[in-house]
Image 1 (cartoon, one colour):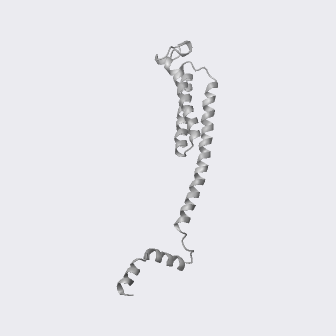
Image 2: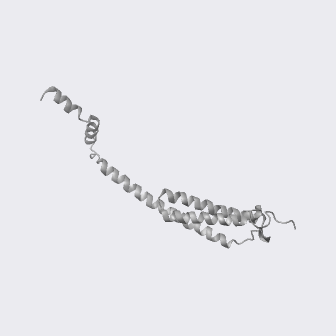
Image 3: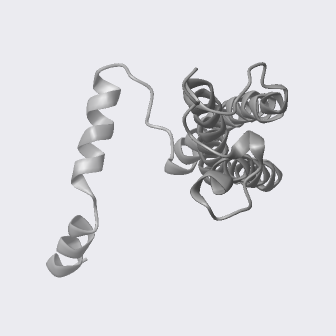
Length: 153
């Protein structure tokens, strides 16, 4: 071989990785696993984390869904005053909870859960509209939904 061929062979060697292998061997460590094994292991770990996260999203969905159904059985008169404020706050929490689940289900690619969360948002907005629109004059008010404040006794 001529000198130029030897120089080309020497320049093709990745000396940093060779030195790293020699140091690991000298320290008594096993050789580094190939990149494909490391990537497969990381993908498996990420898949396990996603499964756990999806279970938490479903648990949150159940809780928000329970609140959205329970709003039908509100135990107080919500015609005016602070009780109306509490009812509207609970209805707003239904909307926010539905949006929260919507974002999470979009992130974890859960289409059925996302659809249910959007239905919860629509339901919460309908409940809010039922109470607010007559009071602001957009819909025809009835006796139960005429004012924001309770009349003085």
